[in-house]
Length: 249
Image 1 (cartoon, one colour):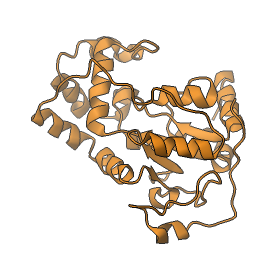
Image 2 (cartoon, one colour; image 1 turned 180 degrees about the vertical axis):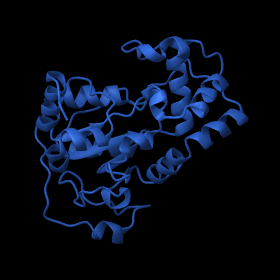
Image 3 (spheres, helix red, strand yellow; image 1 turned 30 degrees about the vertical axis):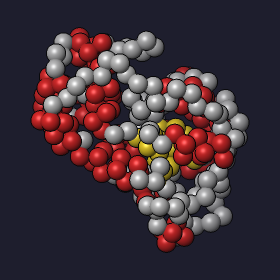
């Protein structure tokens, strides 16, 4: 895959940090990216990294943050209707249409009638889309619930990572949603609901449960064996394979 200078620089930054953060939109990713890399990492799926930098994916620990799908949709809708936020704008091909959304139903009609996820801006694509590898299986080493900042911070602390700030900033523009609209959201993001609920019960999801191709526990966090995680599943993770974790960019 040909890479321009900016893409090569971002990959080098990830390599220096020793951690690959899969930045799912509307999940506090800007705060995490800025803290970890001193710059913003684009909304690329794990598949992009598997194709663009397979050696990097094998060498460093990967992680992501997931959010309750209804809360994420509400945040995405507010962002879409405003045409963006303080630091970013909705991508130009979608901006005018998204600004024209008057209700959640307008946005849901857009989601439900799309024949491809590429007809949706990144903010509305399912979270699971970012985390599934080329083979279709979840391919990220660690997945954290956005609501469990303690587990995420402990993960970063164990690798000498940065302190996070303002991870759960509230959105004062968040729209109210009817029961029917919530039902539509849940149906469209059904896979995200399963993923989020499986993660939220324990704060993190290890590669033994996600189906990651790595099979090794990152050296900066032991296998999960507390409530909701199977000790047997953790014990199946091969030992002895290390992933690099160095300083920030």
